[in-house]
Length: 346
Image (cartoon, rainbow, N blue to C red; front, side, top):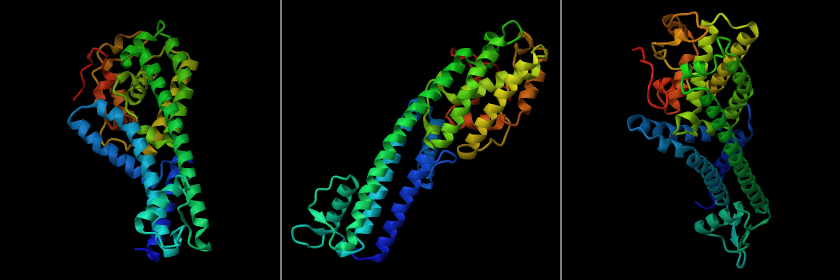
């Protein structure tokens, strides 16, 4: 193995792969993660989501995000270690014992690679000739680069997860399902309370869309509490504002404009997820019978008309996929904390 040019080429490819993947994942703000990141995190989530769907365990999914982050960072380091190890194995003179100038063994080269990447620099092994004095410097820089990126990435992920849950809680505070949102914010048919709240949420939802694009692993931070689940919060807010926009004729032009803006912002958020995380469902989600919605203040449409309108919205398919990909059921967004829900149409 020592002295093989092919091993050196393979090592160079692995080093290039991990640098590209880490850079694309952590520094790119306009695309999803790198090829290694995407395959690793989506594969782990697909496997655990399948287990969750057969045997419900929100607690298990909640632990996935942090462990997946650590697994990703460890994978970057191990692939870099393997790449530099292969490179240092491509020549007998790449690594020699400092005291005797004897060529290092495979184990000694692995040891040398590890302490060079971690910038420890013990000095008991050195480059055997001038041609191999630059690669250890590059390896140390590579290790420092990966460690710095990893720490920055973790801090940003924690900040964004907190903001994600804050938005979920803010929406859930309006009501535990679409009907409760409308009941608590109608303000005597004008829905001024709802309009005020959605104006405050618009910027946060826009920011979340960009954060999910910049930090793809953010998709996999699951919450076992419905009140903190962003997928359910976004879905039920979308239903509530769509109902009012369609069924109420007593809103002034400014209020209708704010409802439309918020719906467009939510749809842009879903487009962001659709480009990197989810694919639209093949079928329209079941819309509840919506008993009592026609009796809400300011509503001039029948429950059947509202139900048909909601079913006609194309983004419902993406919302359904988002809710399922996040480990929840479509019926969960229509339920209240006590488990009561509107009947779902078959």
